[in-house]
Image 1 (cartoon, helix red, strand yellow):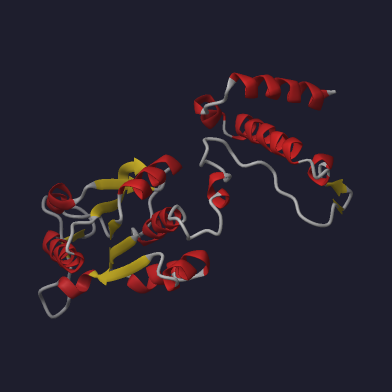
Image 2 (cartoon, helix red, strand yellow):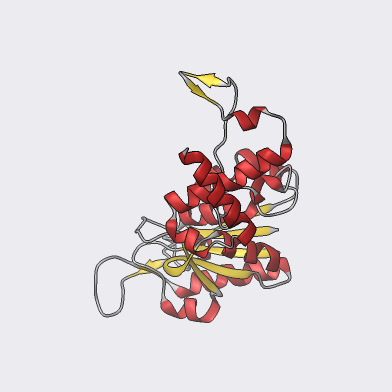
Length: 247
């Protein structure tokens, strides 16, 4: 997978994405990450890419032409048109199903980081394929959302994580929250690791983890629990699990 990011702050994006797991994937050639300084596509000596909004109002608006020129340059270098995403509070809220859908469908993705009071609507209408939000709040720019989106997306690419279970067992991937995790020592400040996890009985451990995932989702994210696909067999086990827990 290749991800291109159009931004006013390329160093900010690369500082976040060149570390840890994603950084190793880039070094190993599994992921290609490129940033593009929007100011390189400005026309005047001051490299201005913004201007005042028509109709008045506070702040500045990113101009359409530098964005279009940058995107067209990326298309020319790739020899193909990438899926063009704009990080925007007006977009579809990012979730695991969106990430899975995108990772399966696209090899090349370009991300536009907004700034100031927004972006000229005409370039959004003309070029943007999808607007994506990371939540209902306001940030100073689109760089942090772009990094969140790119990081979460890259983890879905085969070979980035050591095993598929690294992401398929995690919270949200299956529609449920992840089960509790423990490590050594088996007793810490009077708190003990659940006995089943020390038993070595893989089926019992798997069943316990599944029940814990359902329980956690029901208690912490009832909105997710209502939408989760839970089989009748699992619900029967879960009710039995709750009865035993209350004894």
